[in-house]
Image (cartoon, rainbow over all chains, first blue to last red; front, side, top):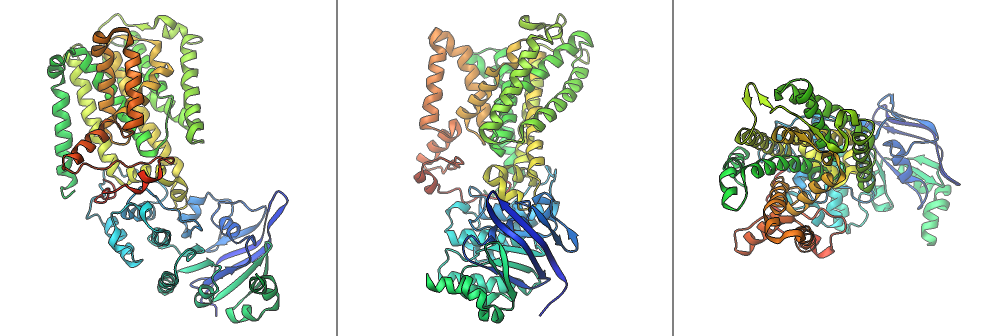
Length: 256
Length: 348
């Protein structure tokens, strides 16, 4: 099953918010090149976990290792610069700017690093950065709206735009927080195809998802979180048959 | 937008240069005078730099008088005690301003929104208070700082039109530089800060460094203006550090049009023209009228003069650019109807 060495290794991560134990002693490991899904009921700590990975939340204890180097405690932009990208649950884009500009920002961040002083360069219509942005937008299916302001997009398209913003940086690890939430079935399937397509380029992905259709059509491994703890990790068929998971999550979902 | 950036630049900067360089002539036609033209150009530099901070990054500084005033005092002291030549004063003022901008930036840019505004105001007020108290021996306190020799530049006396053309060159170069910043990768990042600083941070960008850079560039424009002000009139008033100076540049930006570069400069011209020429016609109530104009613009033309100009162009079918309402509380229909901002390129 393993395509390679673990790209991301999390050991014993815990986080408490006041009286709430959001994460408790979480171990997690993602093999390079694989798609790993995290599922669990609402409030299980899934988003908190992703936030820990990118430095948005500092864990109380535990270690996070990416590509063999510890990244816990680094500033978020430094973690991102090492090759991680994150698609948020609520699409985070640059609303008043054109789609091209949205993606060009990320392309510049990839090319020039965390800070550049390139004031003499002009980002005109035929600039390589702009071309690259246009190509990528076409790939995610937004090629017809290159010059529209991002805020005019539908929710599903905003998500796709955010995905393009993340992909243009060619991250080694892509974190997706419910990438298909709010999408119609047709759009969901297109997104699944797109995610599969980019996984063929060897990009590692961690996906949080509620939609079991998405999870079971994408993931090679699944980790189940409940009340901040990992209750199971394994291949999709193992997870499907795991009684603890059915009780904590799938069963609960059926009951509801 | 088919023109190449270079051609567009040649037209915009050339037009701007033509208007500025002929100002001493045409301002007389509309009831002004030569020194007013110089003052307008100097304040235009101040307002232009302010737009790099407020217009690009969305950070509203209420303490830019700190840079304007500090530069004015530094220049004044250099001219008085060191040399009547403005070159040493220019370099020393530049150095001092960089340090002041870095220190104040370091302390204020940790916060955003209203907290940033209040912090910048507090620092400017502290400098103002210092000029009136512990630094009184150097600043002359309430009396201000008076130089007794006319400033020179390499033997040329800096008075009248000489000062005007110096200021005009600074303004034209400053305008060109601001336009170039706007369409550069660096400028793209500054504008992304206003749009979504969090997304920018999680795209791998050191947002703080960009904010600091924008703040310092903006402060350097303000310092240049303060320097030129003292070259124009060899006198430094404590008002240069006063909060009302910070307030004026904010008002200029808003009535002219934030994030348009040209707008704040038009706002500066309008304010000074109003204060010096219109005042003669309407007497004591001029402040009242100016206040009313400000209120009317904010309510009915929140994009300032530049937006008004574009609205007229659209009305007569010339297709002016629609204003970008980058205001969190803009009414929903305004945000929905934002139409033809389409044909824009990154960096434009």
